Length: 408
Image 1 (cartoon, rainbow, N blue to C red):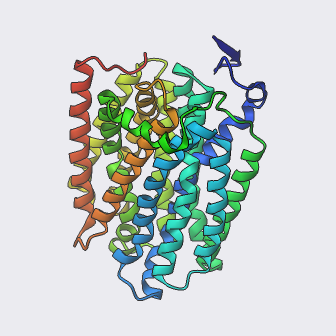
Image 2: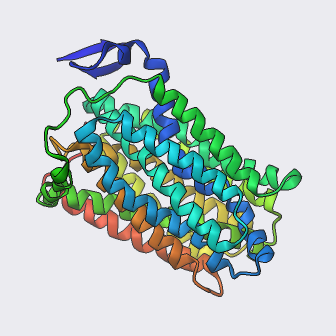
């Protein structure tokens, strides 16, 4: 049974406050999901100057990104099963508190090693947000409505990577880089205030003893369809995370742009996520989710070809193929996330955590790989996009032939 409220379907046993507070539900979920993008993209314009200030190679400064993602992914594995056992609010509030404290520590960092450590602590707190926001979406919505909400959330959260580097660039014009982390601490406070006003979404907690909550991952490992879908969808994001780590070097060092102009090009690329998600919402009225995923994966492949052939001719010749790749991710990600979650009937928090853990673990590998001392990062990024696009498109075609379909 579902409750009908406007055009959303709520699961039948949910707290009535959730239905009454629909207008605040999606923005809060979007804010919580946007924490990784805000925490990484806002500091991107500062990376080259930090390398110069501390006299460190850019590969060392990029560890503030790589270590953030590795730590973030690791802690995701804990928040999911813990939230299945004790509810979503308490772990989420704990994570936000850690995030706020760590953001202030980042602002006080006086060396690369201190910033890297503080960023790892910041990631440990931020891990609660995106994992549990997806689990909360699974708690509240179901079926095609969940897919629609995931798409709306993707549209709203796309504003974060668009604005984050621009805000970072503006801060660097008139202030110093520590103010970037002070603003992130304020963002964490806003998220905590929203969670405090929001009811618990998990109406029936697991009665599994705390010592056995991690056993949920063992059950997930016995679900081959879930594991295959997680791996395929995670590989599709590999080029995007590689771009995040390599973009400042490409635009500032290779093309000679200022930090502020770089932030605008990065925001242009982030706009592609929002346009792709909006396009997904429009096209799903005509095409099945499976067809949208096929188009998205094919777009990543095509973008890789264009990067290899035209990407070195100038900022726009690089930005436009990258826009296509990110746009294609925006089209495919909402239905793919929903399809992954459809493969499980229990342990939703753990399933969400493992999904995002895989995203960010592969993303960290992509960030590390593109941060190596390549003479020219553009063809490397093009080869990554071409290889990943080919792999996920082929895998998705095989899965469809074996009976896995997107929601019609």
